Structure formats: C-alpha cells, structure tokens
Length: 486
Ligand SMILES: Cc1cc2nc3c(=O)[nH]c(=O)nc-3n(C[C@H](O)[C@H](O)[C@H](O)COP(=O)(O)OP(=O)(O)OC[C@H]3O[C@@H](n4cnc5c(N)ncnc54)[C@H](O)[C@@H]3O)c2cc1C
Image (tube, rainbow, N blue to C red; front, side, top):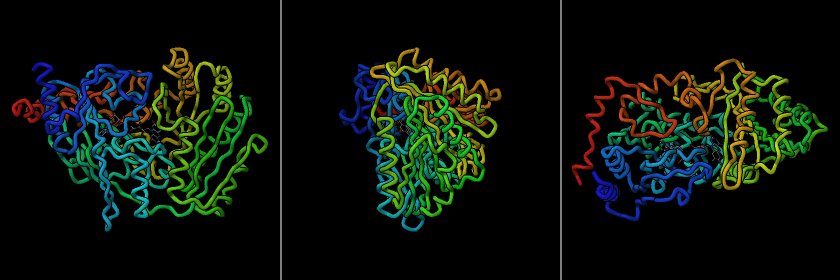
C-alpha cells in the first residue's frame, strides 16, 4: 500500500473528517512534553468514538505501523507519541466523558480525561479518587502505568481503583477487562497498559471526599550538605517508620538551595498534632508552616500549585529524569546520604535546574500482592526521582550528573534490588522492562504473545513479544478489515 492510500484510509477510519488526522513533517511542531526527546509520528488521529479507535488500529496494523495511544501527553519520554519516529498516534482528546453511578459510586471515565477535571467532577458528587498531583496528566497514561498520589496510602494506586476497562486490542476487537472478564489482560493493563491495548473507558472505584485535612511544610533553606543531609535522614526515618499512619502522606523535595519536607494528613488538626512531626526534624534547620481544615478540592488545588511552583507544573520543557524504588532492604545508609549530598554540592546552577523528589509509598499500595497487577513495586517504602531541566535541551554532562547521583545510591544497594516506575519513563535504562515490571515480566510477555503477537502496541520500552504458538493464533484473528473496506 502506498503512503497516499494509507493516509486516505486513516482519514476514513475517523469518519472521513480530514481535520481529525494530521501528518506532521517536523518533530518541533509537535507539542511534546519532553522537549529533549524529539519524536516524529507518522500520523496523529483524533477519534471521536471507540469504533473509530478500533478502525484506526486495524488500519495501522494492516499497514505494519506501530500504534501508541495518547491521553494527557505527559509521558516523560513522549511515549504517548510512540517514543520513536513513525508511529500512528491515537489521541484520545475527544474521549473525556464523565459520569457516576449513584448506587455503586463507581465513575465511568473516558480515557482522555485529565486528573484535574476528574477530581472536580467527582467532587461535585461528594466523591474522590486516589491519583497523582498534576491536574494535566491524563487518566489513560496514569491508570495504565501506576498512579500514586497523596491518598494512595489509604486507597491505593490509581490502577488499584480500576473496576473495569473497555479496551481496543491490536486486532481491532473491542473487549472488556475486569476480574471476571479477560483477567490476564486486566492484570497486564494495570501497570503495563501501553504494551497491550488502548483503554478507551475506565470504570473507577471512588471514595467519599475527605472533609478535613492538614497540610504541612518544613522548609530548610541551606546549601550545607550536612544540614541538608540531616533533614533527609530524618525524613527517611519518618517514611520508613512501620507505625506511620495511613492518613499521613509525606514527601521531600531537594533543590539547590533548600530542602522541603511537605505532605498532607487526612484527619483533624488534633490528631495531626499528636503525631508530633516537628519533633522528628532538626528544629534549628528550618521553618514549619501548618494549615488545617482544608476540603478535598482545596487539597487537589494545593497539590497542583505545589507542582506548578516547584516544577513548573505540566508545562512542556526539556528534562532528564530517573526514578528509583526504595524497599525496606534498600533504604539509604547514613554514608550513602552523606555521599549524595556532598555530590549534590558540586552542581553548578548554570548547567540547568536540578531537583530530587522522594514520595512515601506503603499502606494500601503494599496491601495488594505484587502479582495482582503488572505494577510489581508493592514493597516500595518511598520513590525517588532525580531530574535536571534545561532550556532547549539537556547536555550529556548534566545527564551524567543525574546518573551519577543514582549510581551513588544503587552502589550501596544489594545487586538487582532496585526498580524504576513505568509512569516515569527513563529512556536511558539498560533493562527497562526488568526495572519497570520485575518478576511480572515473564507473565506479561506471555500475555503479549496472546493479545498482540505482532507488537502493534510498541514503544521503545514496551513489553516484548514472547515467540510462541499464541502469536500465530491471534495474528490470524487480527487480519485487518480496513484494507478490504478501502
Ligand atoms: C508534571 C507531572 C507530574 C506527575 N505527577 C505524577 C504523580 O503525582 N503520580 C504519578 O504516579 N505519576 C505522575 N506523573 C507521571 C504520569 O502519571 C505519567 O507520565 C503518565 O503516564 C502520563 O499519562 P498521560 O496520559 O498524561 O500521558 P501520555 O503521554 O498520553 O501517555 C503516557 C503513556 O501511556 C500510554 N497511554 C496513554 N493513554 C493510554 C490509554 N488510554 N490506554 C493505554 N495506554 C495509554 C501512552 O501510549 C504512553 O505510553 C507525572 C507526570 C508529570 C509530567
């Protein structure tokens, strides 16, 4: 098939409306989130219905193109654009429906919906859901890779809230996945979703919106490695405390001139004060700010402002980031913390903006067995993120600096004990699949062979196909009707 007839077929797949398909010719014209990673898709199609999603997939697969869905477009490595040149992108911007069942309180949410819009909608019904803090992130990429946020210690990850999914498979079939329907697929879609299909709609469990909470912040303005390291050590002890209440979320952000411990307590001010958090940190090193009586939407807006203030929010930029899971056996020794902060002291601001961020895990996230969903890092005590943001691009030496920070830490960890978060895509990983999916990888490869043997849903770090008989069976079923219809 020549390029021209393929382009025409793709337009037919979205009902013949040529305004719904673009064929970009220049990577810089694409509004990609990470400006450091130029990606040029073959085409970007914007379907208006699940049937159109299925037609696009059939059309692309028949012509041998790779396909990646895009929801909020916040992939760190532009995987929502395929992550490499030449993919067909299925942009779900028009699939953003929101409704709620008044009996079960389960929400039905179009995959293209953004976290901020979802939170606002649910709150009008007195409900809330566990998810991350950036309002511009799309549910499609969030609830298929993980989705951790301040309420996750109480309610779990976003993937743990999924009751059912409507999904388009590589052969264009539209199926449902849940505990009772296509269970293997349901397992795979909750943590490794982009390798398996395009989720077009989620049914999500919701919770009564919390009515009281406390926000706290401890700011240590210092460039001293010793002072900064002392705050981090105190925070690590807090995060690793097995008696930490589920209601307490805590994180620490590390910048060049300050260390900020912050978080949310989902409960009364009296209960928060009883935790005596300030006593756990070196008093002379910083200033506390504590505010109470916030409702859920104020919390959601507060988290969004934090992301905006400290990290520029969901605005595209050039950056390089690595993530690291810290499990009970791999917490940092005092020696490793000291080495890290001394190394950080050698960073020069002229090279770009450096930041580190650590978020507590545990609680309801850990209650889910590691083999229950594709996301394997259930024993993570806290996640670390190490990043540098530049203007137009990030230099190789800045990337090396970030890699060195991580190496200082992993050098002190038992071999092979560390993992990375598939929601914080890191294009530099040597074995990304192993780090993202760990012990769940063999099972994911088998499911991949059964549902996507031709590797239609591919990005540079997706689950690879396991060669085997499953491949032939589904390949036959998957013959596209798109060409026949043309
Ligand atoms: C500023 C910022 C803040 C963040 N904060 C948090 C946080 O607090 N907690 C957290 O856990 N993560 C956080 N993340 C990470 C975020 O959850 C992931 O990057 C997520 O994958 C983005 O989803 P998206 O739909 O916006 O991105 P996209 O680029 O659209 O998609 C990301 C990946 O998911 C795939 N995908 C998209 N839609 C679907 C679908 N419908 N079906 C199957 N696969 C799909 C894409 O193909 C791509 O591989 C943050 C990211 C940013 C940029």
